[in-house]
Image 1 (tube, rainbow, N blue to C red):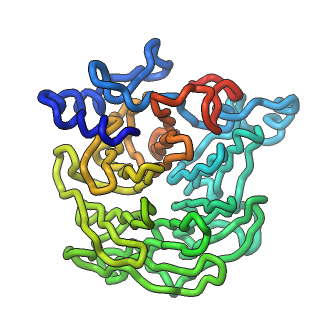
Image 2 (tube, rainbow, N blue to C red; image 1 turned 90 degrees about the vertical axis):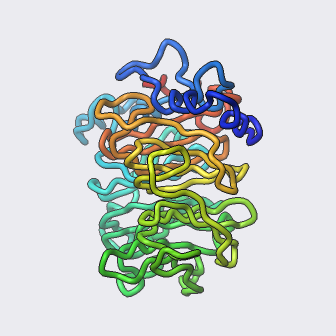
Length: 369
């Protein structure tokens, strides 16, 4: 995204209506639009285009020759194994990881490899209880925040179990996990609760599991939290924490020192009603899911609103959400938005990126559905 161009969108007269249309344009309900669904709509310069919806492995992976036999054995339908109740998503080099709180495993759609796997379902130390937050480091290691086990479970690039970080004594209500790109530090968000004072980010050594420090405490002042939900790492190691109960995003430097915050409670652009997860792209722009609004808002690194995408709706369709939760931005700038209610992931492509570009190539996979 070109920061300058997006800022121009909210600086021109009449742009509020344009942004409103960007979030509320009525998309088709079951079939792809004859025209690309773009955000923002004409006459503004488009920044993102709706690309596809993922509901099962059949939407992203080719059906192998043994597909019919596999379906007979597993009971899955022709569209592949469906998502049951997806929560979070992480994407690395065309490998899409989705946590499923009901199926109790992580689905991996390896698009370049044309394969699908389940992670965390086998009995043993790597078995998951209720996976929610996800992240992947540069080496391809997967980190899963298991709210049921109150621990972070780590798997290698080959999906094999490696280790656990934390445990019951470390978290009141583990909400999410974020690992720095080098795979050195793990940031675990403890949601706490109404009766708990443990509203904080706990930082661990990613390899040894050693507890390094905590960031924040319960409160509403600078650098304090009320029901924190998620964390993302931006430019220069900045930490962006979704402070759900205070309806804002709090920014810290890489050492955990408070920098600033943005957002407030309300229904206007740049405000929040029920913020949940956060992601950052390569330019440092910040993407925040709002479950109540049924959209995600995009801010520059300092918290200035650039654009929002999606609308709350009781009817499914591209860009329509009832219970959105997770979000991720991949290396190519594609955005992945999870909705628990409609059991789907919507994918949006930067308008400047061709459909066959990047790791998630449309030309090599089934048509968008």
